[in-house]
Amino acid sequence: MYSHQDSNIRKTWFLMTLFFLVVIGIGWVFSYVYQSPGILYVFVLISILMNIFSYWYSDKIVLSMYKAVPVTNDSHPDLYNIVENLSITAGLPMPRVFVIPDSQPNAFATGRNKENAAVAVTTGLLAVLNKVELEGVVAHELAHVGNRDILLSTVVVVLVGFVSLISDFFIRSHFFGGRGGGDRDNRAQAVMFIIGIVFAILSPIVATVIQLAISRKREFLADASGVLLTRYPEGLASALEKIASYSGKPMARASNATAHLFISNPFGSVSRGVGKLFMTHPPIEDRVNILRGMH
Image (cartoon, rainbow, N blue to C red; front, top):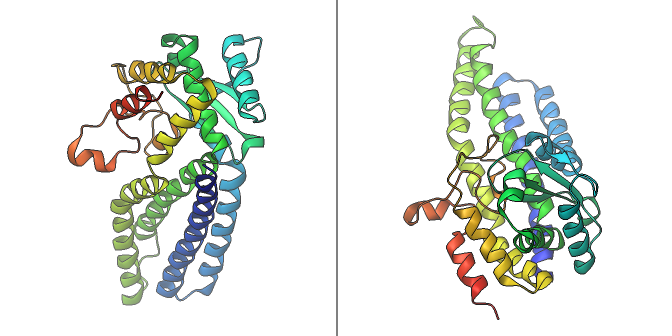
């Protein structure tokens, strides 16, 4: 478990460093095409600011995206007490607790470290789970906090989203760039447009690859770590079955950039076969079987 925690820290720094280098590389392409070194300086600044921003504010962005509402012991005493008791058991600081107004049963944890963590559950989850099942889900999310998954998972949201912004920027530079500047300008605009199209095609692929780099193994580890807190595998197993049986609408604000954060894919289950290779989560039936095999 400790090696997994250290691995997540290394992956976070690697991802942020890679992002820094990629954005600088893109800035170099711009500065070369337009023969303007100032463009490269701007991209270096953007890269630095985005890394700082994603570290300090990515959790707030995700919570805001899903309209998460903070809760207290007075507004949701059962949920609050479960989070508080399990946090004490896990030796973790009490995280902030949020409820997402959505009928799909789901949950996620976010934050840059255990001292600044947050756990969010949907109203749909509160509606369908009993206390023991809810404890299993909360323990799973607290395990992500303890295993230091949350920073890596949350930083990915901002950095992946920035890939899409870059592609849009390239394409707009073609349509709204200078006109009538001669052959060189026309060639530059054509290059920007081609690069923009490539980024537009690659951005969802990049998002998936980065999410898979986080590894589906973290879900299995969080399941096992959560069970160590509750000492009752059936609670989480039953909760996952109820979550998997949901047949209503996908989450209203579901996003490919944030899908990996949740305990279950917010877009619903993915068929096995080739589709399984690109899943952000392991199949729930596999997780349930493992949980029920624990003694």
